[in-house]
Image (spheres, rainbow, N blue to C red):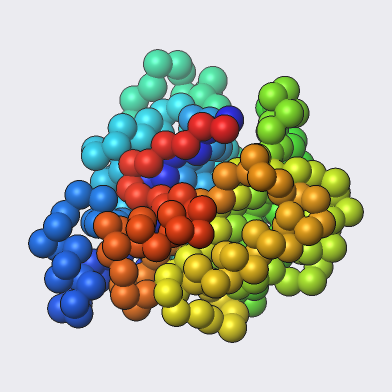
Length: 282
């Protein structure tokens, strides 16, 4: 399996849109991997996770090919993870296709019911389902569904309950591999821990929220300390082992460290650090 990170920042980006704090100024000056856009990732060139306003930048800068995407998994409806207005541009006239519109395969968007309002509104308003552009399906925590060779299981996230947030367990049955994509969330709800333990899954790759970086939050997000706690428990219940790769992702300038600084700290704790355009295979 493979994961490609297109956007690796929290909601304000890194550097922040209007911010002059020391970490943001450092990031601007250093550039490169220290510059982060809003959250988005791709599994095996097939499963797209989240759709921020920065998606078009990811197309231009990193070669994200939306023409190949048929499945979109939404973690929750905060703006840095979901900007459905751009769905309009898969309508005929804004886009032209190599098949007749009647034969076009719609992109299926999965989200929780509470995060679906803006998705369903734009699909209905612009008749995007009728013209095979987009369709929506409900993703329910602990209710698995199959997309091609993938078994996808949404899990409850510890985040803004108004959005009914989800993290995703994705298993490639053909390859016998599994990934846990855990953004935005605190140190997991008991219900999620119970499901993971009972599932018997062993993850090959775990992507963990690290919004707080060297700080620590009680809920909603994690930092390095939270990542260490989650890794320890995953290993304890047999859901990870010494071969599992753990990657930190989703960073805020409030966490104080730019990428160049964070890499050194994370390496001491055996964590990978994502950056915009990073690709990991496992």
